Image (cartoon, rainbow, N blue to C red; front, side, top):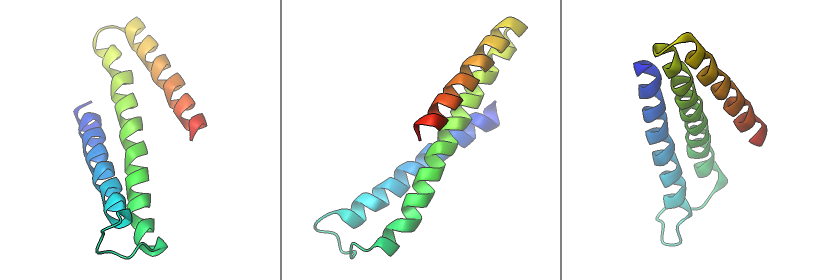
Length: 91
C-alpha cells in the first residue's frame, strides 16, 4: 500500500506539472508559440499520469480494508472495483 500511495502522489504531481505546462503555452503573454506540437507531449503525460494516480489511489483504498478483516476487505475491494468501472465509463 505504501508503493501504491507513493505512485498515486507522484502521478498527481506529474499531472499538475504537465497541465501547468499546457497553461503556460496557451497563456496570451506566453513566450511559446501556441502550436499543436508543443501541446501533445504535456497533454499525453499529464492525462496518463492523472489516470494512473486515480487508479493507484483507488487500489490503495480498496486494499486498506484487508488490514482490518476479511469482510471489510471484501467490501472495500467491491467499492474499488465499482468506482474503477464508473471512472472508466466516464472517460
